[in-house]
Length: 498
Image (cartoon, rainbow, N blue to C red; front, side, top):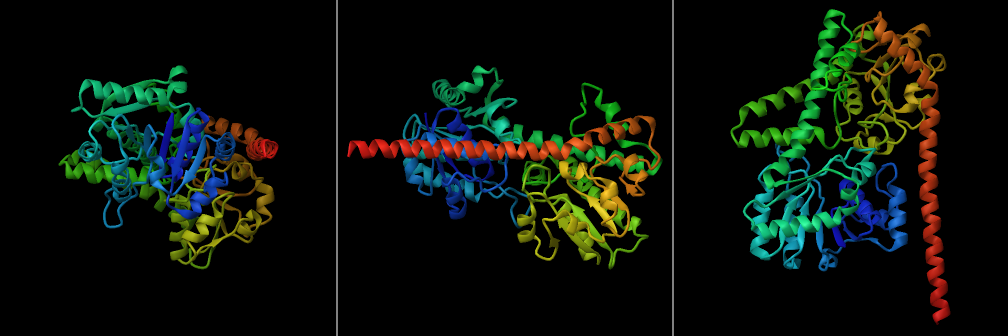
């Protein structure tokens, strides 16, 4: 099929590359010149494992191209709308200006039978409003809401092997129109459906709610376990053992029950705030109050980390040297949006500490967003003479650190494990004072076994992490070489014709 993807940021770039990999002819539309230049060169404008290879393969095959001209999508059968919906600068609500602008640019290009597919995360009720605009402009064009469920660092895998596909249809459309739109999307996703990916067809409102409800539930689980960590801290309990025990209940599950610094990134924080704002607009105060509590607990987890650092220093932050390991909100990403580590680093800096931040991939973004912080790529430089080390992001490089080696670089062997992933026994045996909210200083037998397992795994983590990144780079290089061979073959054919 001929497909357009309008908005080639994180969601759109991944979606465009994956649709080309499924065999479709894809035109990606992007107005940001730096971003589109990178994409045209087969270079992801952000770090996402596997994406560089798909971009190069798509370009080499001729199935994937990028433009800044919306008119180029006129003959496409399907238009995926993937623009961002960030938090408004003046409120918690979602900023829909980019989305509305894209729809406005599409309206004069639409023809009967074409399908506009919304993938952006939006407040419930948005699709109904946009449907009316599309109907007024082109009778016979349809709008389907098809939410994305990508996780950064696994976005390619999540697109090619999703947990489910959701089609939100116009409930006021005729059965024939709904069947047509369903058939079109089924053709787009045919390779996935043949692999038995579940497909749900519903109305616009439910499809819009699926995404924000899912993110709100995940955020709630994270805030819940962080609140339990506070109770464990006050009573001597062990939050890891608690999470293991309640996670054995199939109704609860163990995922997203890892106590730490809370959630961040470009999705969960802004999505729960927009959902909260929309709930208040609808008069549903119980949902808004719940999301208030989730957001507040998330902020408390970060404040607790600051206090843990302060406590390690005897109550005084001013003049202390603190090394923060991790600027991204999660490992295997360069996304620093609402990253807990940078938030905590900023709080420590404001309190008078000398803060150094390091990260395997996020330093450039962190430096641009937080010019007041000392951001350095080199881990050894970041920890030099530090009074306290704070582990903020669970990169394999940090999980595999040798506490003896690190101890020779710092001024004081003090570490705050903000992710609860270090082998506490190993670090304490090396002379470190280790603090992690909700985890006892004298481990229980169950937590000791967990720590021992972490210690056995730690030695291979850095090796595996580097190996996976080398394989990713080699795959991209192979794709680039394939593209060059294809271009060379085409040039040779052209010369023979001439």
